[in-house]
Image (cartoon, rainbow, N blue to C red; front, top):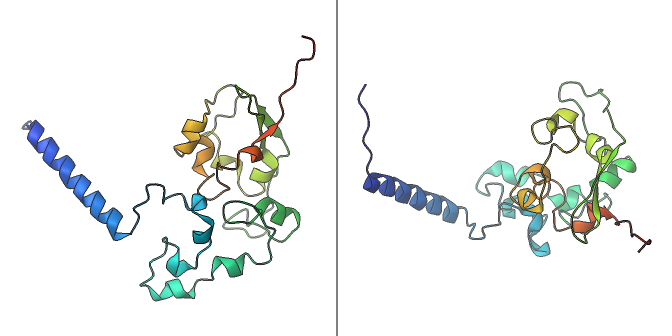
Length: 197
C-alpha cells in the first residue's frame, strides 16, 4: 500500500473548493442570514409564511402549492407570543391535539411522566424548571435519554452557549419548539432569598 502525500497547497486548494461550493449553495437558496436555519427566530413578518414562500419548501415543485398554509392550519389553536405563535402544550391540555405516540400503532397511549426537574443556575436569573409532563406528552423517553441527557443527577453539563449551538435543549428549542429567546418559560423558579443576614 502506497502512502498518500498531501502538501499544504493541496489542503488549501481543497478548502477553497469546499468554501466556494458552500457559498454557491448558500446563495442558491438565498440565505444570506447566518441564522436563517432557525426558523423560529425570524422576524414576525416572515413567520408562518405559506409553503411556497417559507424558504424551506421548493416553490418550483407543484406539490408545494398543495400544502396547507400554516396560518390556516393553526387558526383554531391557542396563541403564543413566540415561535410560530401556537401554544402547543395548551393545545394538548384543551384536547385540540392528540399527538400520535407510536408511528405503527395509532391507539398507543403516551407514558406521561409528571415530574419537574429544577436546575439551579448561577447568577441572578431564576432557576430552570424542566417539566417532563409537557415533553412526554409529545415524545418517548428514548428521544432524549441517554443520547442527549444522561438520566442521572449532575451528569449533564448544560449552558446557554451549548443550547444556542443546538446541543442539549437546543436540539429542539429554536428549531421545532419555542425559541430560547423566551427566557422566562424555562427560567421560571425565583431564587430563594436568604433573610437571615
